[in-house]
Image (cartoon, rainbow, N blue to C red):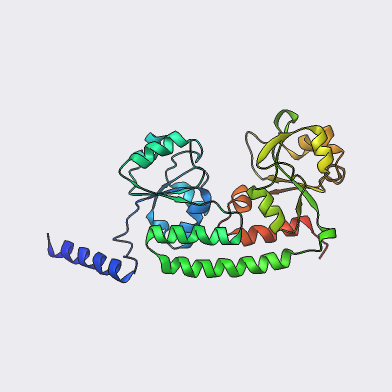
Length: 287
C-alpha cells in the first residue's frame, strides 16, 4: 500500500471511530435512494454527493433529476436496481413489487428500509434511520430539531375551531368519470388534518374508487388533487363536469386545490411548508 493510500485509510478509520463523516473524497457516490422523501432527507443531511442513482419519485431538489433513474418505486426490477451497482440502498417503505425487493435483498448489497410516516414523530424517525445508515447521526439530530420546531409552529398556526373546518376530499384520479378518493389512514388524510381540514371520507381506509352516491354523501367543500400533467391527469373543467362533483359544495364553488404531490404527500423535511401551503389554500382570505 502506498503512503497516500495508507494515509487515506487511516483518516477513514479515525473518522469512523470518532463518529465524524469522512470528506467528500472518501465518500464517493454509492447510495441508491428509492422514495422522494428519502432522497430529500439525504440532501437535507448534506449527503447529496453520496447519491449514485434515484427512483422516479425523487424529483426534489431539481438537480436530483440529473441522476440516473431506476424507475418508479412501486414497479422496480431487480436488474434495474442492481445495474447501478450501489453499496447501500435506502428505500422508503412500500417499494416493490415484493418479489423484486426480495431479489434485491438477497444480493450482496446493504438494504435499509425507511419506515413510512403520517405524523411529525414519523418524519423524525425517517430522518434518524437515514442518518444512521449514512453514518451522520449528529447531522440527523440537528435536522430533526429543526423539522420538529417547524412542524410545531405550522400545526399551531393551522389550528382552527372544529365547526369552521372545511371538508376536503382528496381525489387521486377521475379517469372515465370514476373517482378514486382517499379514505382514512393515508398520507392525504393525515395532511388534510394537519392543515386544519377534515377528511370528507372516513368510512374506509386507503384509496378506493367511490360511487356517485358516495361523492354526494361526502359533500366536500374543497377537492384536493396533485398538480401534474400527463396520464392519468384530469383537468379541473373535466372534473367539474362530472355530475356527482358538480352538485357538491366544492363543485358549486369550483373549489379545487392542487399541490405538488411530493411536497404534499412525501412527509419529509418540507412537510411544515406543505401544511402552511395547504392551510393557506383552504382558508384564503379568512385569517
